[in-house]
Length: 203
Image 1 (tube, rainbow, N blue to C red):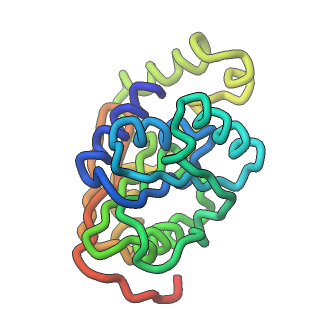
Image 2: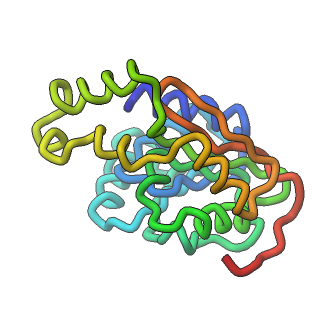
């Protein structure tokens, strides 16, 4: 997961290295901190529903010496707590399969991005090749700590994830523009740069 987080951060920074960024479903803040490390001109706000995760994220940012460039706030991905056209970058990792209705979330991403703003939604893919599935199975049953093993993670996340075709259909139905769906050995990415200002519409 650490390697995937670095991959996401490097990819996101190539898309937008300055301005205002949001990490949706930030958890303990590791991606937000990694983004701030890699892009000194980027201010990152992590958004999460869990007070416990946000408290841990605050602590992690302070320990990393980045409390002045990384902030955290409670919020729902279906109602991102930022005005229209106010962000340069929105990222999310391993949250897509947790969203009960992804299309309103993708519409919110479109709403808060400035024209030319970038987005990157990263998750596992359910249709990963057999070798990828074996690696996830091995990690779940052998490598991860007991608490994650009891929760059947990350295998449970793989089973709840979308296929490439399903992710493409989600993007097609959303208000996002300039998107593409990319794939890796065990992951998929919905990413792009908004081509025009998005008029707010009902989800």
